[in-house]
Image 1 (tube, rainbow, N blue to C red):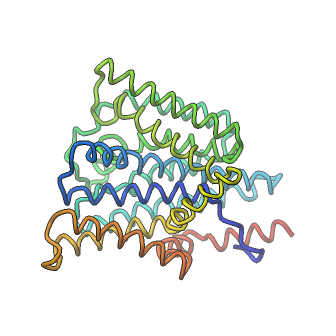
Image 2 (cartoon, helix red, strand yellow):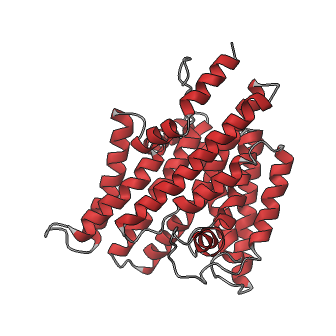
Image 3 (cartoon, rainbow, N blue to C red):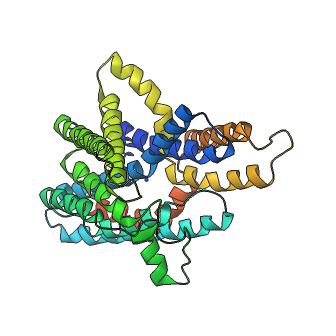
Length: 351
């Protein structure tokens, strides 16, 4: 999210998928400013539904790639497995802390960092499982979440001063994002990363999973199944959106010319934003606070501040990544989670 060796080249498909999730979130968070026609409302609804599942999937793929690299570098996995798990676990806890701090801005964004952090914390201890076990666990957890009838039953607030309620909220009952909904997608992502996310067969399988999810979603709609958060229609819809989007982006990133050349030209700016995804996500909060509570007279409540918000958030994130490089929150997480120490340990182990 280097050692003394040359920096590893960025993965265009993975960065673009992460960037796409950020772009989707920014667009979705601008929606309360204006009343859109029904077709645009439906489109924005689809964009909103794509963002968090795609984030969970991409986080899992990243973890899977790291685990795969550790396994390939070390025959004695115990020497490096636990430091890597500790690094990911600390990062996960820091995501939760950042999420709690962003709550202080008191804006209309439903925060995803707490359930994402909890998901990553659990996932840190599962990322080294064998791929077939990861696949099985992803299926089991996806099916098991259908038995969860709590989403939407609690008020959309959680206070960490009441830890049991806080955990219940972000694990089970949040109507927007919860660990039970994100963990299956994270585990699927780890599986994809472990078997090779750029392999044609892996992307074909990912796309087939997405199409199957879409068929399940359509069947659920036809059968008038519950559309409540966390139920069949909601879960199949999320699964379809994130897996199809991920497969299409990765295929486009690796396609041959001339189609691949055009696709990569489109994906590169999005991928640049994806390299500072956490900082871009956090930037929304002060921007939203300013534009809602301290907007100038020439920006009355409506579509204009929505456009300003989208443009500022994406352009500032892109410019920072291009001109400065690592995002401020990405740098902070790397420092506090011991990323440099882990990289140094890996460098010494390869000598």
